[in-house]
Length: 486
Image 1 (spheres, one colour):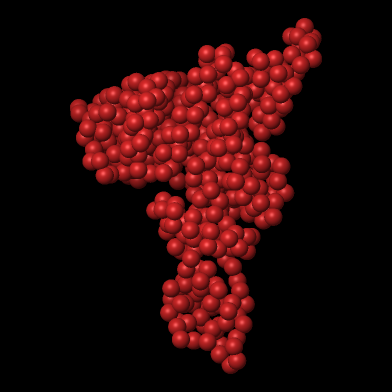
Image 2 (tube, helix red, strand yellow):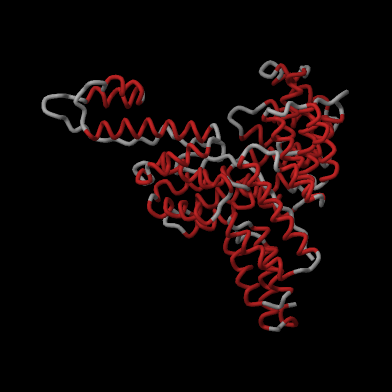
């Protein structure tokens, strides 16, 4: 019997160029992407100045300049495109998906390599509920037909979807015409970072991240390792990684310096502590004395990836606000303590206004916690009050995955097989669901299908030894040669 955990949300640093760079932020409307259309003049009218205004000042200024002018169809079409692109971008930012969908349906021909910004927004709109069949189709179309944008498109999809779908995304990238070994290695490393942030007790993941971090001098990976060793009170290892973080960063952050100071303090190396403190205190006055604002920033930063450390910081508060109770609820949820999470979310909901985003997020967490704790009817009643469509969709996804997990634990393997197929059709493939289906096939003695399923996992995630072992087990069962395989 194997236990699985389904991650629902995640975020991933990404870049918008074809050169891997783990420290950049992604933007849908990239400044580096421009579409040049040659002006076609009507008679003696020279519209070149309007094109220059469009390029330098934007479509609104160009539209004003073109008013009552005999402009060409090319310019008129470009002005229309730019105005609709701005409207689509605004709708997506405001999560007004119905308006966005209407705009996309109105101009289906704009989804092409020349209109890549529109095409990306079309793909983002499709991935709002997961990496399902239609999203996969649109992604594959870009990766194969617009290969110059394949790497950055893959990064975008990973930033828009749950971490559990990333192996499937990477597998499609690896099989596309846009595939580059260096790009794949960079994206796989980012996946390992996210997995390690969720599970600091996996020595294989730590080794993989450590190896790649040293190879590319990645401050993000070395800092993550530093905090994890610090949390385990392994101060020597923590100091080693924070030293690397500081050396590899162009401008070390206050948090990175604090990690090094905490490591030195744990080792009682007072003189070195004072030297490092005096070196950086002028740049970061917060090192001298944390103000409440600095403490809030530290709390927010810690809670992004360190649930145990976050809860310890919250315990130090004399009294917790409703927002802090919601924050604690999410940490307990990450630690698979749904009943404890439920209590904190209840306290948060009592103190938050019902028409706020904070209340919506707390209600979402409360619904997820109820469902994970087994109170499914109560969870569905709570989820009906959710206002945002994406939260409702994600709740439905978690409820479906929980039902399949419960069936696996009670050894109803046929239910697992049938419902996991329905799950993939509705929400797209997920690594945990695929693995569970593989073991369900194995336990039902459908060994050929078990081999096929585990082979998919090995192909998508070739560095994971657990999937290789699972494939070997299924192959041995298929060949009925357990003695030779042991």
